[in-house]
Image 1 (cartoon, rainbow, N blue to C red):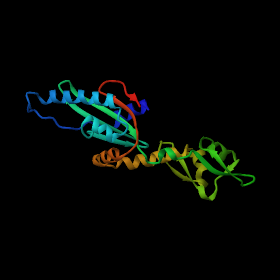
Image 2: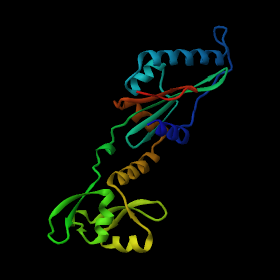
Image 3: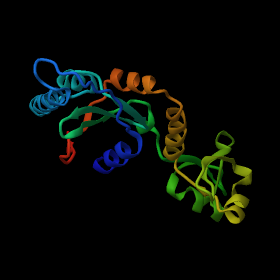
Image 4: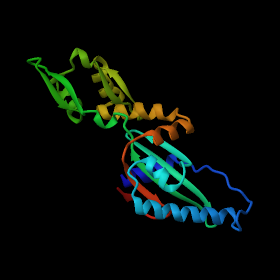
Length: 216
């Protein structure tokens, strides 16, 4: 999950916000933001908020930006301090059904036509060997094309696609993640923020400024 946080936050989270040059109460905006960042870090460390909504309450406001990925939300809070932009980055669970996809394919034993569940990592080998067939209910098979695209292919075309076009059978969970990623790419900033803040998924990790992410 640490690797996931690092990859997703760097690739997808772009800090947004505005700063004011006016001074309030004798403090510059940068000083106020530094104080707010420090207080937020203390609050998060003490309370260990369990959801994104509770996290926002502990930090003192909604995040600057959120990204939605299969099974997870990533949000950051950006503070424009006297030391530059400081961030609090939080990952939490997101219930979209991606974790519930079972990596088994219902196939038929070629000789007896008896139904059997085959682990997805053995489907291609079993099909190409002639030991297993696809039943009528599973005539579209999840595949990765030679250029890395994820989709489905008719079972009747699968053998030729594997031999001649470099296609490979992939797990159903891989297909589901690819479908969700395409959906999430179309979400607006407001939609991503709304989805993550309304999710009841538990906190997975928190990164305070330059510190290493802490797994919850």
